[in-house]
Length: 193
Image (tube, rainbow, N blue to C red; front, side):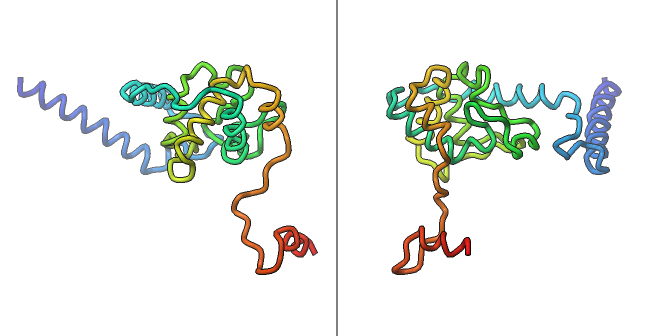
């Protein structure tokens, strides 16, 4: 019996030592265009599914209506579209260079098959090692729910929401304030001269 236990311990030590050597000697893929590690996608999906399964599955605390879809579209354009795309547009250079590739949420099914609570948790906490940031520090709960219900209904949005999504981008919200007595347009005009 002692030899069996010693064999198991030795096997575990060899596996951990092998993994350490694999990562510490630069064998593991780190570039976005590298092939994925063996079982990388399987383990990532397994962990994600198990994590979401143990969370509460609340219904959206907001109506799934045009007003919330419109507000969700504004948030989506400002914070999500650079990676997840817009209707009728190709992938951005940022999305094309990411691994794993971010899903293009207005192509095909998007995440219309995910319940809003799942999308909410992904928006709120992000997903490690994917490039998907968590927005709990920059968006409020209502905004995160608005994006979540927008994406659940992406295949049946009213024309007003579609127009908001494909219309011109909003001005960045991080513009520096104009000097006293000067409008933001004056400051922008000076910047181009």
